[in-house]
Image 1 (cartoon, rainbow, N blue to C red):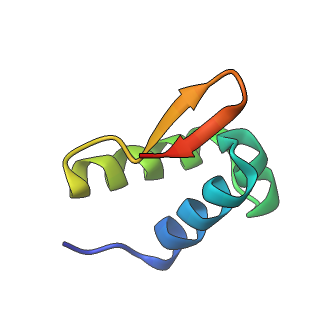
Image 2: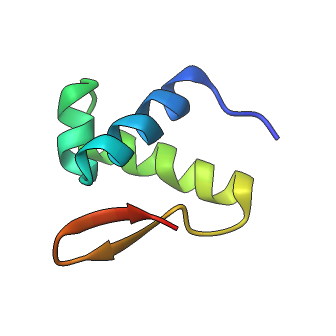
Length: 60
């Protein structure tokens, strides 16, 4: 299992901001790149890392 620093930073920003687009903007990176990195993290861990609600993204 290997995560690079971009993935770790993005995870932290999603966790803090509860939003993929806001996390991408604060990194800064495009939302599409952030989405690709999140997909790679899901594949690495074999499941969802966040669940979506009306209030935002929350860790599983």
